[in-house]
Length: 313
Image 1 (cartoon, rainbow, N blue to C red):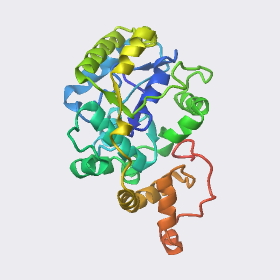
Image 2 (cartoon, rainbow, N blue to C red):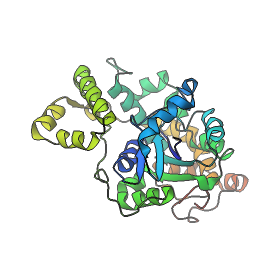
Image 3 (cartoon, rainbow, N blue to C red):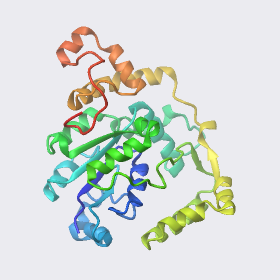
Image 4 (cartoon, one colour):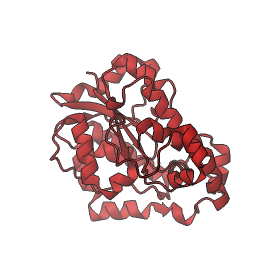
């Protein structure tokens, strides 16, 4: 069975929340595991392999998967268009510098980056994807060359945190499913600041969880995680990365603001939105002279309310 929607990412921009509030919706079927990465990492496995992940969809109205690797991959838009040109796309973004810092914490938490020096600056030097994945204007332009704007729903992590009910309803409306569903995960959020003390123990828990979810036991597993002994054991295995990894240095943040300002101005033009709730956006506007606005055709900041789809933002 073919999916009729995809979550594109970006990475560290509420993709887990999107997956979770769709997972328990009676009109929706999402893949297990969450990130199939088919159109990026596993395209050589073919459509038959991919579509096996949706065999249990039954009569679901919305069928799909959420893979944050899709948004910044230059090959993904055309691959997806050739597969299904009427597919719906869900894109979530957040302040691009906060996203880059969260990317660094993610690499530490996953064990991909380790050592005595956990500073963001050190990670930034060794991993160009921190900034590349935050080039929102460049990546969205690639998607809009292939898909019409009304095929793309844009969500912002900051607005999800401020009003998860409203943003969930926007998502459900876009996918054509029951707006009144209240997910058990609506007000939950994964805490990116925590990593494992013992990675082996975490791997065992995750392997057991992945197996259980493949057997359709997702709700039961979540209930088990809330039991006091299990919750206590999980808490004991957590370390707070905020005590080990300070926020980036001011000069680093300023350099990233300068580097990403053109990307945000391009994003604003593509979407037609000029009220992004991001410190990095405010910095980009402050760097933009009246002459720059004229050339870039960027109107004054009071122009637009919040976006709906990319087409009618």
